[in-house]
Amino acid sequence: MSRLPARILVMLFCFATAFAHAATLTIDVGGKRTLSTEQLLARPDAKTIEVPNDVVFHRTMTYRAVPLRALLGVTRLPDNEEVQIAASDGFVTHLPAALLFGDATPHAEPWLAIEPPDARVLAASPVRQEQAVFAAQCLACHKLNGAGDASMGPDLNLPHNPTEYFQPWTLKQFIRDPKSIRAWPAMQMHGFDRSMLSDADIDAMIAYIGHMVKRRP
Image (tube, rainbow, N blue to C red; front, side, top):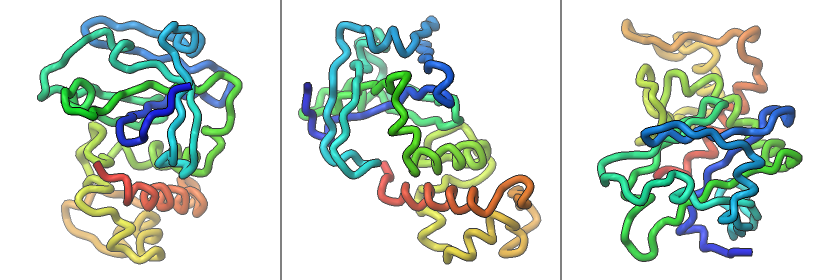
């Protein structure tokens, strides 16, 4: 088992969907390759990685993972380029080439963590459930930490997070019916009635946004 300091570890997750289908990973760096969960786990460079004080779960977590650089199949990218990671649940993020291939010591060592097909712990965590609601409802219009391709609404964590300047009841009401809190001619955000989004879903979205306050890049 490899025990790596959290400060030099970048973890990416590949999850099974509803536990019915194994996850697949598609890599496109000039030519597309698709790998199944089983193929990733069977790689000879796969290792068991231990992350002390995982930033999401706040405890030591153990993952089966493969080195991302080897997976990409390239040894270098221009420093001004990025690697985009897009998940099937709508989550999108970007990793700068300088972070992935930087020469600084210690430098980030990126790994792709693979959830085995029969694993349920991570997907069942409250944070993962909240993230799923957030991704489905918010990422079509908003970026998060600069990640994503949406540009209709503001970034929901940069420079500040809505939970830092809205009272909890105001934020919930704003999501439910934006114009009941503040309106302007160019406003594009629509409201969500209860047939579209339950109170529990809004609570989950707000919880995830709040969770990201301390996770700015």
